[in-house]
Image (cartoon, rainbow, N blue to C red):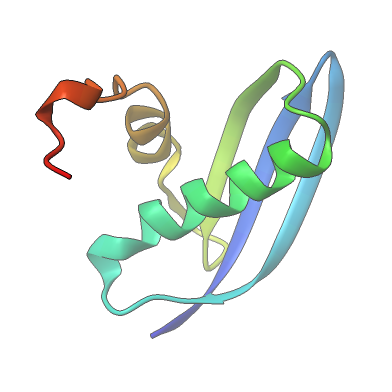
Amino acid sequence: MEFNLEVHLIIEGTGLASRGRFTARNKHEIPNVAHQYIQSIKLETGYRRTLIEGVIVNGTIDITDEVIKIETQPIPPMDDIFW
């Protein structure tokens, strides 16, 4: 499914708005796609301190809280990974 995504970020005190058209397999995957997009923006800006101000899908659906929840999940410990 295709959707329009608009993100509003504050990077070290400077506002940034970016939008684009993305694809996801289903609507439950949209927050993950948005998170990956924000991570790519962070990569481009040198991982400066970034605040997620808003994430809007198709101009009306606010998924900011869902994306922030993904962003704040702890990184799993490496000892649980089997090589």
